[in-house]
Image 1 (cartoon, rainbow, N blue to C red):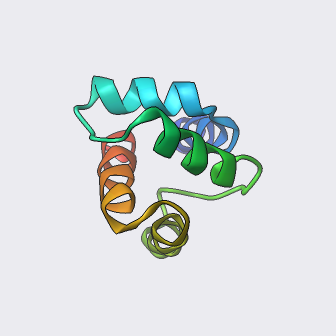
Image 2 (image 1 turned 90 degrees about the vertical axis):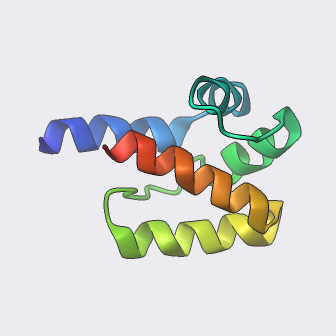
Image 3 (image 1 turned 180 degrees about the vertical axis):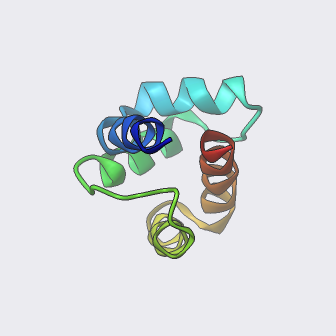
Length: 84
């Protein structure tokens, strides 16, 4: 299971705005392209572990600061989908 987590976390840490937008559409998450670009720019190179609840919560708080609380809630929904 650890390799699965590593692959997902690597993808999150290198995601582009367009990729994030496509994933959001796929999972019916309401994020527009501009918001996806902001979030992806923030995530790139962060080396976060979205499988760690505390780390993910801190990450969502930071996303809320840069893109707004509604976007942060939507991105969190997407992260939860990735961790299932």
